[in-house]
Image (cartoon, rainbow, N blue to C red; front, side, top):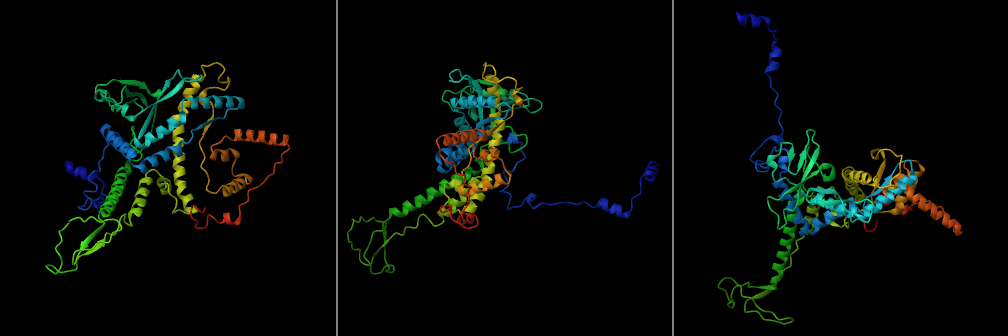
Length: 485
């Protein structure tokens, strides 16, 4: 009875609807299929979370290997140094953008003097190198009474090894090794060991300091959502660096082995033929500039030098190109060699690299420099007469940072393009000076002083518009070697 009522109330389905319900669509991806050929290749693939993948032990191993390779591989050291020099350069320069030009000048000069006193540029370069080899860099805002500036703020750099929690299991689940977070995912506390784990007097029960997050600068690249600790930027290239050194040593060993043998004795006589007896593998001392005779039936042949092999340079080229790719660095920058480049390809390869540098600099401004400036203004506000009054809260003071500009390969062509952009109003003096890492107001004031002095001394000022020659105008379209360009 109940089944009859349920059938009566249930909607009737047509045969076509029944067929559509019964049909199951199964999508298939070749990359998701595990076969005997790719089983071993994907054996290490896992579904760990970003923090579980970057556990304390994994990060320790990666740091040690990256530091070892950077310390013993000339290419690795050069790549890391070049990256730090291109990103930080001689250091950032502050430009305040408040309505009071005199106040802007005073703040910029005071901050510049403080930055030189604490060696800000050197510390930023060290932090960029640490991010490349350690995966992350830390700095603690401290007070240094021995500074020769009124503001006693200072930066104390900390290696990633010291940011850890020995008793992590006792903390709540919102803590990651070395960092404690609140319910919204914001860091509220960092745990920093008083002694480095690599020190000889370090103890596993070493105490650590609990430093509030407002005093700690943590710079790393988050590759996955929810990632809280960094891994080395050169991590994908570590096996390639090892292969590069192994191949170089193998080629050198083969060349030395071939050079150890001056020649070899051989005979054309058949086995048990007419040839004097010779002891196999017996070395023969040869005098310089001497004519020697061979035993009867024997000949002397000189060893052919076949090392390094013809593929040695090609192998190093391809390997260095693959190594530099994870850093968005072109081959000629990583290798320090542009002999195989032409003008157009050199500029094209550098576009990706310069864009990556601008991204790093923007990240450095937001995470490190803006917080340093805020801490510096907080302390400077306590000193009478250092900061002007009536400009409102510090957070509302507009500012920007200038970095070193990149030199153009053809200055004449760049000057011509710059004049065209200014004449067509597609750019501004502020933008053009910013590309060179300069403050346009400072440069114009300096130029006004020069013009006034030249007029006072009776020197003429000739206005010359840069006009590229026909030869330079066609450079970009020709396959011209970089050295000639």
